[in-house]
Amino acid sequence: MPAFLLLLSAAVVQPGSEIIVTAARAPRAADELPASSTLFDEATLDALSLPAASDVLRLSPGLSVAATGPRGTQTQVRIRGAEANHTLLFVDGIRFNDPASGNEPRFELLTTDALSRIEVVRGPQSALWGSEALGGVIAASTIGGTGSTGFLGDAEYGSLDSARLFGRYAVRAGDVRLSASGGWQRSDGIDSFGSGGERDGFDNVTASVQAVYRSGPIEGGVVGHWIEGTSEFDGTDPVTFRRADTLDETENRIGAVRGWLSWEEDGWALSGEASYLDSANRNRLGDDPLNSTFGDRLTLGAQVSRRFGSHQLIAAIDHNQEDFRARDTAFFGGTDQDRSRDMTAVVGEWRADWTPWLATDVALRHDDFSAFDDATTFRGSVLIRPVEGLTLHAAYGEGIAQPTFFDLYGFFPGSFVGNPDLKPESSRGWEAGVRWANDRLGIGVTGFTQRLRNEIVDTFDPVTFLSSTENADGKSRRDGFEVEASYRHADWLNLTANYTFLDADEQRTAGVDLVREVRRPRHTANLIAFGAADRFNWGASIAYVGKRRDTDFDVFPSPVVTLDDYALASLRIGYRILPQLELYARMENAFDADYQDVIGYNTPGRTVYAGLRVALGR
Image (tube, rainbow, N blue to C red; front, side, top):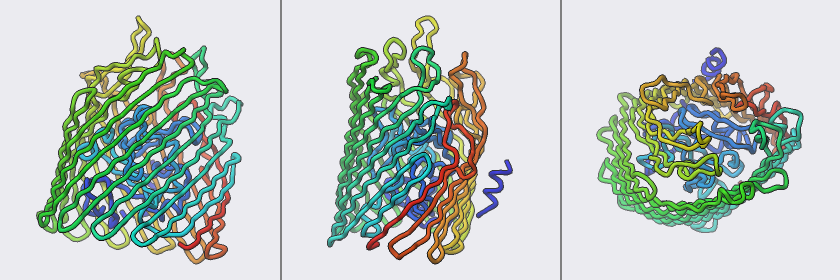
């Protein structure tokens, strides 16, 4: 307890004048939102300079991160105790959850080099964004159509034979802004199993391009992303099915493109968009191929909104078409399958400012699924500002998560068969809180409660030795509260702190006792500090993760174990040699914590890096 109390006492919520895009169907100022949200802006991302987006997300209230070993291995993010596939990820407006990997976001592939901001909106948001927004929404954005022009480049080398290169160039010509970026990261890594075997390294390449046209009330643009990664990891022995020092390797690739056109004038706003995502995941054991999965998603959307004085009405239609393919050599084609499904949804939202101190927002969405039961979700919220600086907020939201292709159709022949009769998971959640802020400091407290129904759980038949899935008839719950605080003194000192208490329990069968969920710490706390003075700039963070449970499948009958708490600290110090040239050094896991996010898989100790940053024409 003292660790996170110390973090919280270090600072007191930064005034919320930032614009949040994903907490409503139309962008809102953060201080006008009843939803709980966190924004990591460009200044914060630059100051911390953490290469992995998951390491930044770990610093958000209400989020827990579980990585299966070193960087590059499977990384899951859970919002307020929800499952990993209950988080909807957008990258520049593109739905980035991978249909070929259980509809989870691939956070192990997402780097921060090209990002200018990351938004986190907590709580069920399916009434706005549909499936997978059951726990919340994370939206990452590149520098895009706004921001500075010119060239920015980084070169870095450090521990574990790690290297990092990144470059970004943006130019403006009249009403058109063009930008392009590319990045490369690699590391020899560590022996993630920890038995004295070979190191498990990774290699990651990213590229993005964007063109935006703005003239009067018209905006149009196109953005494209390419992510390619190779990761070595320790899996399971094919004979004993226990964790072992293996030569497993996975190659992952995601390519995506989005185009949009919008017009806004005289209280009207019209927009249309189309995006396409294609992914591939290939697994090998040494040089021998095992299996591959492929997925793609076509998304079409249109929206119209109209302002009537202090009221705004929004109507939208969304359509998704998803395809999934699996191929293997290990099972002689036994996993081969080709699947498709689609969804069409209609959305309505009504925002009303009744008085300067009272605002409401309601949204309703109906999803028409081709493969399983349809779903209707609702969200309603109220915001009250009785005096200047003080805000009371409350919201009720519903969320859904569609079954994955794995859940419906299985994957491992003769072992995991899937269940095509599954229903979507559904959640209902309340939150209420209070926040106060002035020009420099503030504080906010939010309590939340959520109930999960039709949770998709694994089953095992001891007679046939077959595994499958089913909808649990019990009701799982997630309760807790979040405290956020920050203080902005001047350019040389910015502080942000937060603490989360979470009680996440699972109930597979109605009427039986609740069981504590695994990989969800009860206590988490974070501190972010950064600033600049003269030629120096600095950034630091501490992430405290409390004790949590996990299941040890190496021991029969898979006992529940407790993982120790830990604190991860990072530090970056930069010195500007010339106006265009900066030399910097940074450190990760500065306290050299010996910890595991997942039982049996080690993580790196203290690592140090040095780099050079070049900025021209910014």
